[in-house]
Length: 268
Image (tube, rainbow, N blue to C red):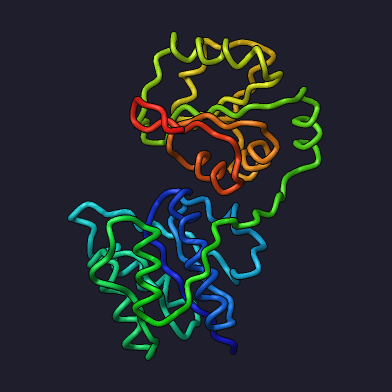
């Protein structure tokens, strides 16, 4: 049976998995073998890496820190999930000791080469670049994942009937880190109406109540869309405005014109 390469990413955000793309591509090109990618569900990797040429399989895990009482259970669970697959090398990009317990046990039992770094850089991208440098793998810098736009014809027809130009406005993250008062949001929208014929406004379902006061045919709320559908819209939008989050990472990956909120300020 052909063995592949395991890459285990404990980070939880969509932006985090986009930041990992150069690392994943570098591992693939070095070994010339496809990757079994173990990730948190919250990364949306199963959408954005669907049918990706580097990826053999995407396995969704819950790698969030558990309550103290469930630590042992989570360690055993991760061990059994990881041990179901065949691979010859493991690359772990985190630094959590409780993750490393089952990973190290698997590497010892199955005689699998394990690679990880103890002293990481502060930020993800330089940390991953440093990781590859330490193990003599060439770093291929590329954050364009080339997402497969696997969405329904019905959705495409519905969205493409919206008049252009489009603008995409993203106002929060799942953690609700940034609060935009309604009166400021209304002022932003009033300014955007002048130039843009369709305004897409993004929240997640948890925070969709923020937009309950907005009722306008020009405004399309995207909280019920999946990340592939949001990718499709951002790619075709003329401009992106939003907080630092998954959609803004997609916008940056696509090299869109954008304004990003950082805390309560603007980053141009």
